[in-house]
Image (cartoon, rainbow, N blue to C red; front, side, top):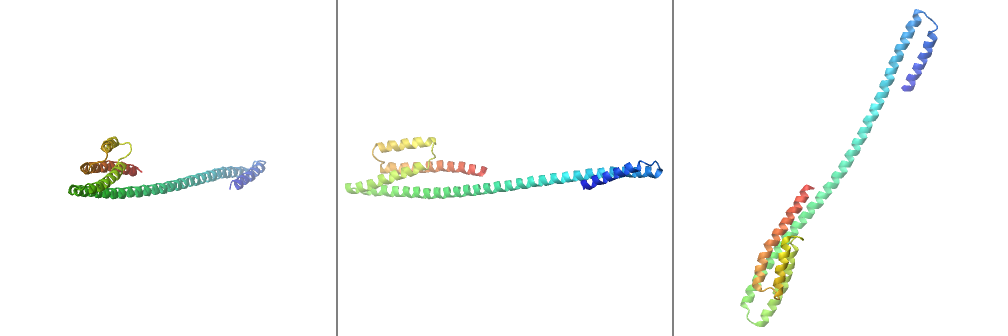
Length: 206
């Protein structure tokens, strides 16, 4: 369009130069017509160039918007995968806590049963057998309860001190075993529950 317009302008300019050799009214009218056509062609050329520039800008903006859309879509997919992973991890932890709570309650019932058994046993040999079982189960139960207290929690120090003092006399007695488990189980569950609340709060921010 621009090349055609410039060619027309050039042709009209040559025609104008040729017509300038005559001073007749017809020549003057022709010159006026040529000047008017030249002006219109210039405006048409400017409009065509402006439209071409506008079209190029629109295409550039559309391409940029398309790239931004693709990037946001990719980020959304990544965030969705992370959300699903954290949700699955939270569900796994909840199931593990429920199972651990069940085992702790079962251990408490078993400790009570052994305490009753000991109360009925008088022979020394029977007492030694049951005593060994109690000590073994007590150590395993203490280790389990300790694992449920978050690392760095102030209560962990007092838990360890209580265990250290109890082991200093050889082993938990049957009565102290039951009392300790009754005390430690809700404490451990409370601390673990607080840790789960913090985890779920962090998950919600995702």
